[in-house]
Amino acid sequence: MLDFPRWKILSITITLAIGVLLSFPSFIPESLSARWGLSGLPRINLGLDLSGGSHLMLEADTTDLAKQNIDRMEESVRTEMRRADPPIAIGDISTTGGRLSFFVRDGAQLDAAVERIRTLTQPSGMTGQRDWNVAVVDSTRIVLTPTEAGLAQATDAAMQVATEVVRKRIDEMGTREPNIVRQGSDRILVQVPGLQDPAALKALLGRTAKLEFKLVDLTADPAAVAQGRAPVGSEVLAYPESPTGVPLIAVQRRAMLSGDELIDAKLSYNSQTNEPVVSITFNSEGGRKFARVTQENVGKPFAMILDGKVLSAPNINEPILGGQAQISGRFTTDSANQLAIALRSGKLPVALKVVEERTVGPELGADSIRAGTLASAIAAVAVIIFMLISYGRFGFYADMAVVINVFVILGIMALLNGTLTLPGIAGFVLTIGTAVDANVLINERIREELRRGRSPTQAVEHGYKEASRTIFEANVTHAIAGGIMFVLGSAQVKGFAVVLLLGIATSVFTAVVFTRMMVSTWLRRARPTTLNI
Image 1 (spheres, one colour):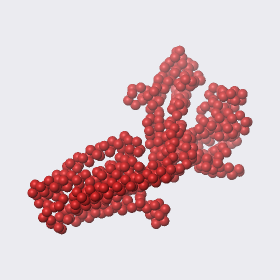
Image 2 (tube, helix red, strand yellow):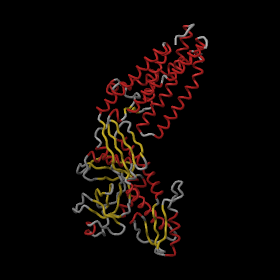
Image 3 (spheres, one colour):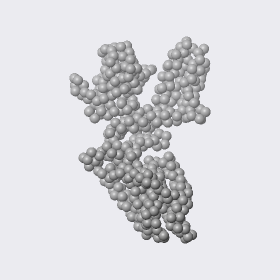
């Protein structure tokens, strides 16, 4: 137990020295780091509660998601009926009441239509339900109703995608270490340290960026459109920049092309008017669709629709074969750039609205840092004095382990590009107090061995050996509790759990291995006949 060859001493010393050195860049202000050429070194990021920033809680619009679900199924039904051999003729599809209904023109094809539609439904998890109920009404009409299990599954899938889209959009803003996590079934928590004005962030995240290209319905009666009515198969959308002065326009419900086929979007300027526009580039499939649609509809107006509003509806003067287009709509440079970011990041599968907003000023963060540093310093000094008074030389070794342990935790967090939060500082204070638990157990065990008449070397050896099992079991229980907090806790609780778990691992190493090495070295050199512990 007390045998420490030179290679082992060197490896322990080098390991701890690296951990301590990794923590130093985090204590240097970023301005000085950049001046000294140290900006590339790993450092700890400060969380929202320490550096200040913006906090948003986003909630999904489940009504919008249900409508999208119905629209997708409508398109799937039309496609499936066309693919049948022979094709199955159906009437107009109604989407009123949150369900799909249509009649089959040939009653002899009703059963075939039902069978083909059933293949479009999917099981919903382990519930045994399917995502759509298919029923026949009045012998000729088929009705599809979304199930609760199906809607829940669609919401979960949409929120997974939405979380990643939100993350991509915020990363495009160049912010450091945003905290983006799902909360419950239909909410996303967004925390962006250092961002004091959340207006741009809300504008970026509140935009669904659902881009669609649809043909304008030229058969619609302008008077009916002005009242919000459109022919069957079409819909009325807002058109704020309409040249006719009527802020409404009728477009076909079926999208000819969508933003899903985009591969790039960037801010550019119109060569004639010098106004900001967004230049978009389609992938190969989208380029072919765009070329085919423009070839087949020369002379007809083609509406560019963003988040349910028509930006423009220019006439197709000639086929567009290059797979590129421009979106114009009286943008400013900032709004065009935000739209480009949103389109590059992908559309949100569901509309998100801000239900909670909070801004933390940097002054409050600085106060939190000062308070946390003071608490940590008081805890460290109190522990150091107590251990010195209680155990003398052995207490001094334990104090060295505590100080090194703090720096090693900071170094590991910097290496992992971790984020320190206010609960994390609380974890530090707790770690300082509990880091000496192992040394207290070891030192008390050494005292017992000395009272039994053992020599100093034997007492130390048995003290470390017998206390190791208790130390291991105690820290395993701590680690289990920390792991549960990390897995199930909120973002603030996770910050506490991370520091706690790191502290458990590093404190066992410093309190047991490092102090044993120090004691072993002293015993070999001094060869004491008695121990004052």
